[in-house]
Length: 487
Image 1 (tube, rainbow, N blue to C red):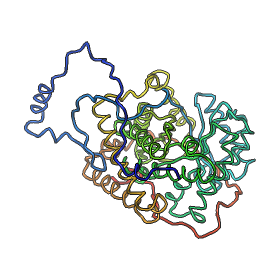
Image 2: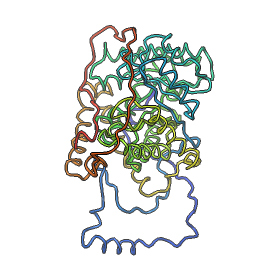
Image 3: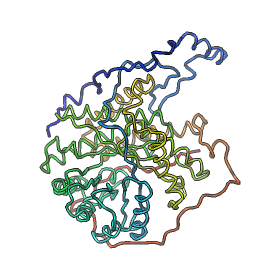
C-alpha cells in the first residue's frame, strides 16, 4: 500500500535541530554542583536516584535535566487549538438546545456522541434525527464531529446530508471501527468488512467536503483501560496505518489518506507526561509518513481522561480537567475535548458544562497558551521524555505489525496483554500509595457538598443495524476503568 516496511522496522523517529533562542542570556548560568549539594543535604543521605520516578512502562523521569539542545518533535503548523464540546443528551431536542447554547457561549466546535439506545449518547437513528440535533447549527462555521461506533459509516452519510454539500464545512466524520471493536470485544460482522464499508463511505464524502477529517486513529481506548503512554501511542499509529491502507484501497492516494486521518489521544492530570505524549505523537506520525512516502503534519484530537475522574470527590476533578486542558494546549493538540467534572457520577448539568467550557476559554483568552508553537521545546525533561516515549511507542507499533497488524493484534490478545501489564502496574502503585488520589486515598471528604447531575428521560431511536454479512470478529475487550476503583 505504498508504505516502506523496512523503514517502519528501522530506528525511532528523529527530526532536524531547531534554532535555540537564548532567552536566559541575561541570567547567570545554573550551577549543577551547587544544586546537587543542596539536594544531598535535603535527602539526608538518600541517593539522588530516589527522586526518579517512572512511567507505567518503566521509562525514567529524572529529578534534573540539562537543557535540551534541540526539539525532538515536529511542531504543529500554527499556534492555538480548537475547544470542542461533547454533546451526549439522549433527547435530540435537548441535544440541539445544548449544542446551540455551547456555541453561543464560547465553544468553537461540537462532538456528537450518537447511540440509538440513548444509554451513552444522543438517540439518533436516521438522517432526520441528526438534522434535528443540528437544527440552527451553521456547519460551514462551526466544526462538527461524530462519535458513533459501529454506526459510524451510516452516521457519516447522515452528517454529509445535513451539511448540504457546503464545501467549507469542517466536518470530522471520525470513522473508527477498530476502537468500537476494542471496546466491545466483538463486531457485528467481520471487522474487515467494517473497515471496507467505512473507507467506501469516507471516499464518497471526501470529494464534496475537502476540509473534512474522515478517520480517527485513536489510542484512547487503551488509555481508558489502564495502558501506559507508549501502548496508547502504538495503538493509534497501528490504527492510522490500517485506516490509510483502507482509504488507498477505496481510491484515495496515500497523501490524501494521511491528510484525512486524525489522531485521538487522551490527556490527564499528569501534564508533563501528557505533553510529552502529544509531542511524541507528532514525531511518530512524521516517521510513519516517511515510511509511507508522505509528509503530512499530524492532526491531533486530545480528549480528557475518563479514568482519572473520581466520584468520591468530584470537585477535585475540576483541577484534574484544568491540568489535562493545559497539557493538550502546551503539547500541541489541534482540538481539545474536555469532559465534565461530574462525568464519574452521571450526565453533566449546565453548570458542569459551563465549567469545562470556561476552563478552555480562560486558557486561551487569559493565559494565552495558544500564542506559542511548542512551548515545551528545549526543556530537558520534555525533550528527553518525548524522545523516550516515541522510541518505546515505535517498538510497540512494530510489535503490533509483526503480530499481523492491528486487527490480528487485537484478536490474538496481544494488545490486551500489553494493556493488562500497565493496568497491573497502575493498581500496584495505587495500592502502595506511590500514586495518590486527592479525595480518595488522601484527604477524603465525607461531609462535602454533593455535585448535581442532569436527569434525562429515557430515549430510544429506531436505527438501521450496523451488522454486515459474515461471522463476528472477536477480541478481549479493553474495558474502561477508573483509578478510584483500584484504591
